Image 1 (cartoon, rainbow, N blue to C red):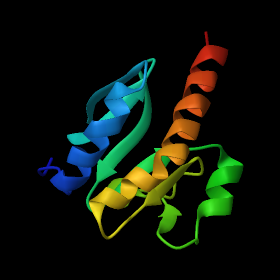
Image 2 (cartoon, one colour):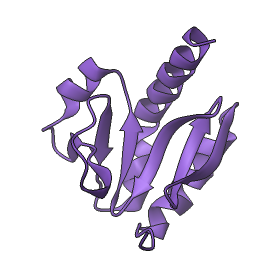
Image 3 (cartoon, one colour):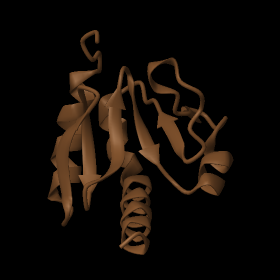
Length: 115
């Protein structure tokens, strides 16, 4: 497997906010920096953006909006409940805190249902 390529400046920004949220832990997914809640993946830094797990309807609504596409890591098919967010300035991810919070709540609720 080749080395994971990602923008380390995005990680610096996300490390300022996500691990401070109760229950969120940093980790890795296929060598890429990632964030988990209850051992379930919430977000993954990939190349020059961030893949974020959201309800499928929200992904459909966001895909195609400026800076949003479906998440397709490693050349895979689009992931229906994942969006990929790209911002030209890594600090702009700070403006997406509501989206990250929504994702964390969604993933936590799905994890609770599976218990």
